[in-house]
Amino acid sequence: MGSTTMIDRLARVARLVRKWGWLCWLLAFAAAAMMAASVIPNPWLAGDRWLMLGVVALCWALALLSFGRLFESVPPPATAKMPWRERLGRRMKRGLLWLLGVAMIGLAGAIVLLSWQLLRVWMMS
Image (cartoon, rainbow, N blue to C red; front, side, top):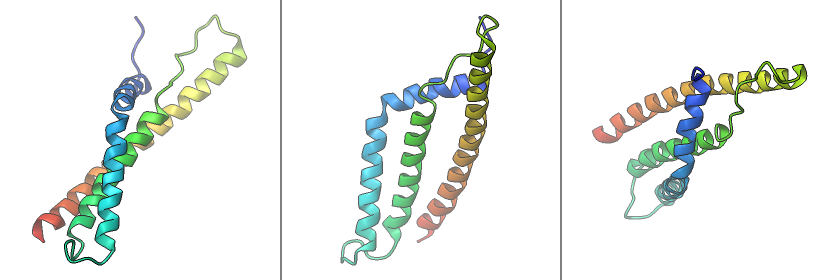
């Protein structure tokens, strides 16, 4: 049994996210509708109270959809029996996915901070 790397773990999580992708799409459309309704002047949604929730929900929905799509098919690690060109290509793909995985983790951290700040302001208003 081989060792499990970060991108292999991210691929497992991405398969779960892809399974529930319809829920992410529903959240994205609902958040976009909430944001649009907040921007259009109407008596029921005065101010930006619902706009902040829409921004937070849309950020999470789009990040989850991107994550699920990006890591849905991670190639297995290269083996010694592969030709050198195929082995090099596989290592380069996995290396790029590793960098994108680190970027996605950073993006998730940034969305957590944005969510924290927007929800804190939303609760105070």
